[in-house]
Amino acid sequence: MSAPKAAQVPAAAAAPMQAPPPPAARIEFVKPASPRSSSFFEDGACASVSERYERRDRIGEGTYGIIYRAWDRKRQRVVALKRLLPHNESQDGFPLTSLREVSVLRKLRGHANVVTFLDVAVGPRRDAVFLVLEYAEHGDLGALLDDRRLRNASRRRLFSEGEVKCLARQLLLALRHCHDRYVAHRDVKVANLLYTARGQLKICDFGLARVVSPQKIGDRALTQNVVTLWYRAPELLLRAPRYGTPVDLWAAGCVVAEVLRDGKPLLDGEDERAQFAKIVETLGAPSEATWPGVSALPRVRDGGIPLPSPLFGGRRFCTLNVRVPDAPPAGLDFLQSLLCYDPALRASASETLQHAWFDDAPRAPPLHLMPAFDLPAAVGPPAGAPKPPARRTPPDARAPKRARAAR
Image (cartoon, rainbow, N blue to C red):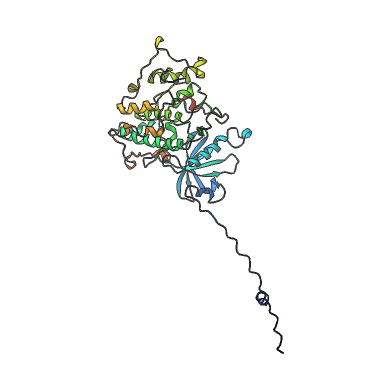
């Protein structure tokens, strides 16, 4: 009789007991930040303005902020600090215009002709909030045009016609970038265009900017009291209930004409009624044939800005060639495509970039051949030096309102 077989034990049970493995280390997958957004997530919080930046001097002031030149200790570069003005912070909290400006600047980052938004910095007080922006060595275009010390025997005009084409093209590229993303700047003027030592034009100051999607443009009326008076489109002067990105193209036409006139504003009215009279004097009187629906606009209906009639001495012919004598025929046609009464017929930025004026001689020079200026005032004038003449500013720019944020 054979011996009984030993009971078979499962292999798993026969194996000696082992301690459970230690828990694996937690693996965190971090999405690499793109170069455009690295500064936002680098520190996890807003930088201290006193620790990271050394403020040098005050270089400008806008409706919604004061601009300082500063040194970035971490990045070893010059930047511009825009201190946000709180306005009605006690009633409304953080300024709505500042929130909009930050949102719009982040939306538009990455274009060569839009000022680059770098970061947000804060001070010890709750109202000390700064936007950190790239620094333009030559300041704004308006200050350059007003500084007669930059002219000499070899440069009687600040910018030649070819150089004006280069500036106009850069401005239109910036506006196309904005409008393709449904952003209306609503304050295009020479004072809001920066000029760098590399010949680049950069649009800045987006405190009045709004997103105006075509699908929602009729949902809510926007504020008509936007855009500095000398650059304000006629539909804003006549209180059109709806408007959009064409208001920026009208302002661009005024800017290009002003540079062609070597710093003399094209339309410099003292109030809205005088401003519309300047427009009529330059472009002729509008009518239902040239601007359908103009007689039904609020300011025309209430008699605030009456339309001139040809039967009572109203001028219906254009004097733009007299006001801008240095512009060739193609240049005048370029201006008229932007300075068009009917916003529906006003050329867009994309259409204007294809205008024949850019192909005519003299052609726009490359950026490295654009003029650079010797501006000792950029680091502060020496003691006892005479001050440059004050800039003539539009009436509504002399005393910026501290009222509710524009819609």
